Length: 590
Ligand SMILES: Cc1cc2nc3c(=O)[nH]c(=O)nc-3n(C[C@H](O)[C@H](O)[C@H](O)COP(=O)(O)OP(=O)(O)OC[C@H]3O[C@@H](n4cnc5c(N)ncnc54)[C@H](O)[C@@H]3O)c2cc1C
Image (tube, rainbow, N blue to C red; front, side, top):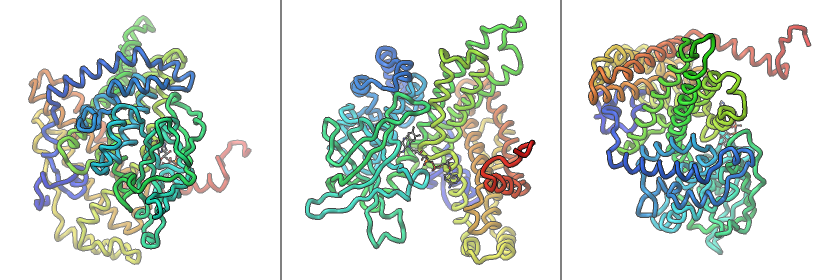
């Protein structure tokens, strides 16, 4: 165990885990929300529910593919568009935990409203909040908080999706007017049809930045007039989507669109960082929305299962149904723990929670999808009928696994960040590891020497977990240690090629998510036991035991498969398919 840093000096819990450190004081005790914050959010949530009941007709919105414009102003008047904006700029200055709780409430009530609100403040105006100057904030934030202006985040382009750094939109400086001239097309922009504050990412061509394309990118506030017009800015027709039908999604076309140099947010060459950090901070709230959706599905499934009888028995009493309900509920508890642990990290000023946020997004969005599917299954034939909410929930939730970083890209991010951290620790052999000329044998030689000599053993155990959960705490410590060594071994074995080994990245990312999920759950249940005693916390102890048991099986499978797998076969099968242009094994040879 490295003892060079104290927990308070560690900037990220999961990155520290990759380095062989357990920064336990970052995740214990489980963050408690102050009573006054709870009261404020409870009042606000009630007001939001009333507003939703009066002004947001979800079925009509879904049918008409249109979100009523007066409802957008209503959201502004209510304060739902300024939750994350500090009070000094006209917002409510909600903490991350308070914002997550509201997202949890808003999402299941109406997904299109959630997109209007989320695209506005989780991503649209976030660059301004994170990187704007005080002058810029004073100029724009009050109108954004009141809903006079709605924000949109404009990064994606037809040729630049996951590979956002390859964006082609240009910004050319005109010294005569001290303006930038923007040209390019942005694609699938949420709130695009009516946003009046667009954060646009564009490339400032320069010879100096030629070598590093990231450094050419800058972020600009493109601010139309009050009617939404700006010379050179055109909005494409609304996309016809599978779900989120009331939300606006369209292209933003920029043709010689002039923007004052004052509108650059974060400075020259900082645009890629602005985009990445904006998305990093927004991801926890996608996890929060998933918590809300899962709770809604558990309620629907419980109502149906306890009322419906077959074979003269409540279907709720069949073990195959119990299994589904238990799984949906325990996993939702785990997700809730991850989201509010991460929100707590943000609220206490831990500077880097990008991995934790990515875990919440991947785990949460996939759990919501599975949970809706299971609730639909419990509803039987009714689940397939449009008068029930399952179909729309499935359609609306599907995109969560695609936007704000696809779940594949986030898994790569989770794994590769860890490999970089591991690589940094292995400084003595770093050159060997990353040299494309280094041979595997040489690396192993280095690795063995290093392992025998200087390896700081990752022997620290989770100390702060309640004794009632000691076996689970030992399990997490044990697998964290194996995991960390496995990541280092992979870096040694693969050298620079490690960045191409996505089969391995998948397993590493999934294990990291499971480790974080268990730590979050153990932290929360420990707090619950300390607060109400072991007897009253029994159902939560059972959840922790259930989840850690399941997680162990997944971790063992993933870690074993880092060494023994059939990856070569997977490559061969996909090659055969690509060569044939589709399924090549038709039984009749068709
Ligand atoms: C409803 C909706 C709203 C949106 N809102 C916004 C918005 O407000 N602002 C905005 O800027 N964008 C927005 N987007 C765009 C969204 O962020 C992109 O769709 C997303 O980033 C993925 O890009 P892509 O669709 O081009 O897919 P691609 O990048 O082409 O990816 C296709 C598939 O390949 C996988 N893939 C890609 N690269 C790799 C790799 N290196 N390794 C392994 N797998 C890989 C992906 O995971 C995916 O499964 C929105 C999209 C939708 C559908």
